[in-house]
Image 1 (cartoon, rainbow, N blue to C red):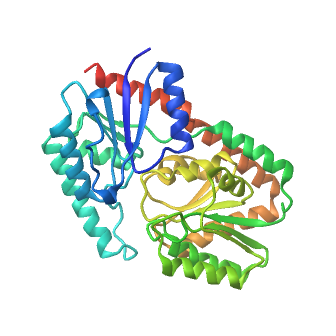
Image 2: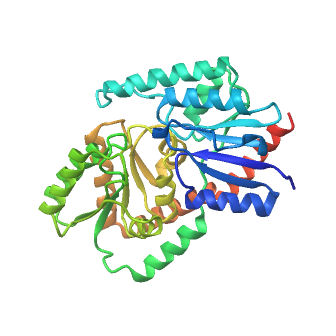
Length: 367
């Protein structure tokens, strides 16, 4: 048992899984985790934080690389002694993996600034450790010669998902419907424009395809949201549209789905992919770093997911139609795929993540 105190700096309030991580750390290792939400728009002021009261500072990167660099340099220079270890949690994408017309000029500018930020952080030796969520980011940090880089993918509370799945199996009333779930649909970084085009085609061609859609709580594009609203008006009996739902309510809807459509342009991980798998729902996604490449790709031959060529709508449609045909023509195979999805998700439990993360911080403190 250790008596470490961890200050976890992140974008907003902790998620259910992060609170579960906090509980596990306290119960298993005697380590306290304190969450502090930082607001990027307010300049990430650290004046109210006393880092010297902690042993580990876990800093979650933001989407603005310039603000990130300023903030972490300020934190390092003004407050931290050598006793306190700083870990960078790479929770926001650091650079683009693909070059594609689907990216905007602002995406490339962000990627360039992000790369320059990493070089600066490497030069000034800002971090004592780097926590990556995918193998692509791990390679980038290793190539830049950062020390103490540890790949630890997300873990989720499987007990919550399994209980929801059991509830849905007992209460579902429309087992004959092929339902596609899409979340963050009104955001371009989440590929909402791709999902809209695909859905528009499918709903016009197939009578028994339905969709459950959430637009996203914030930072969504009004013009894209309007397109989904008009689509829902056009197909009122086939689309269930929400701005947002509480997490457990969303999981219940996801558990009723036939597939989860994950169209992100870039991700650090994509935890919703794991959530879908844990509920027995296969995923159709572009082949991008994060959960698509690290979780789905090793098992793609067992059809827990379909990985389309990045930003190829025809290939994305091919994946959806593949599951549509299996759903209607081979329910036994669909059940087998669902069970395999659940089995794969069990490799990514929050307990396993807690164990690996504990080993990481223990290694840092003992250096």
